[in-house]
Image (cartoon, rainbow, N blue to C red; front, side, top):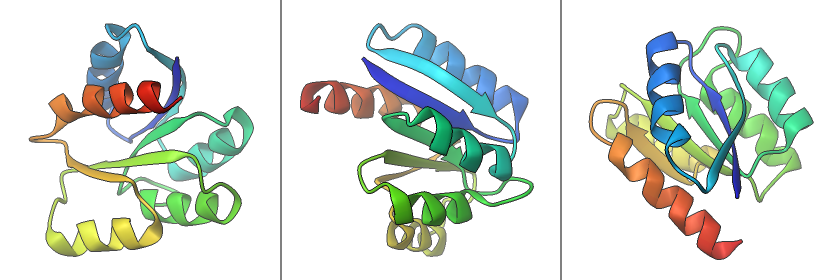
Length: 122
């Protein structure tokens, strides 16, 4: 079972992710939020296996959350999910320690592949 935390300031994106992952037997959503400060606190408390986090959120950006968590946890897998899918954002995310960088417009179907990979590893 892969424990997943979701962070996005869009209710529609959170609902879409919950719908996608709710049908996946190997995934358990352990929490979600709509801002970066709550995301950072929740990730520290819940210690999920995978965080799917928006690059731009109120409070702290997804990249700020990622940078802070990477100081404490090198194992947690991160998917940065964004509409800002330019190469410069991709490079910033990967430099900060993201494992995956997916476009909200094009890459939702890749998320189950990541979960399958994590289940296989664990």
